[in-house]
Image (tube, rainbow, N blue to C red; front, side, top):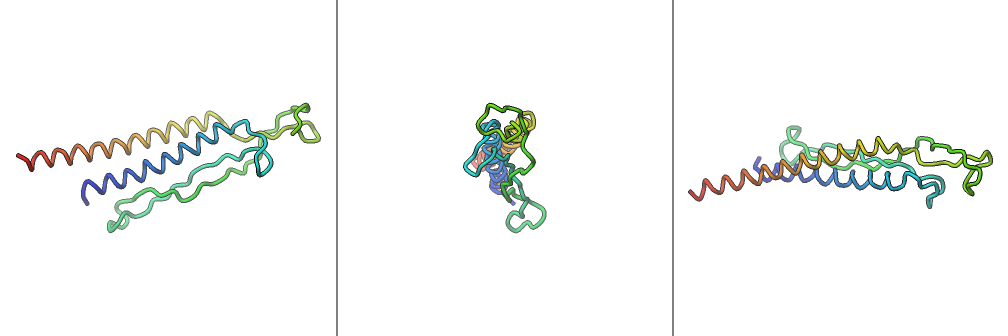
Length: 137
């Protein structure tokens, strides 16, 4: 293993967390979307990660892979609003089942994980520069 391997592994984590941040942002942006092209309210999405072996190291080193983006099919929140044209016969409108607190917590987690992977890359770059400095001396 060399320092470039650690940078490659960390970059897979950064890429996965960037996608997760995009999905979380879409969830937050659509928290009040009550009608989509598919019909009904927006369905919350989440990213599923998978650890896959990195090159020849078998089960020792893992890189991150996005296994799937899944849709949350929990029932929508029903809000009584009989004046809304999308209300059902009982006067309730279906809203996405998105909890902003959960989404913000997930966003903070994704940002910190992204930053941790960026720190790994920065440390590897510093070690490479130090090694080059030793070779020059």
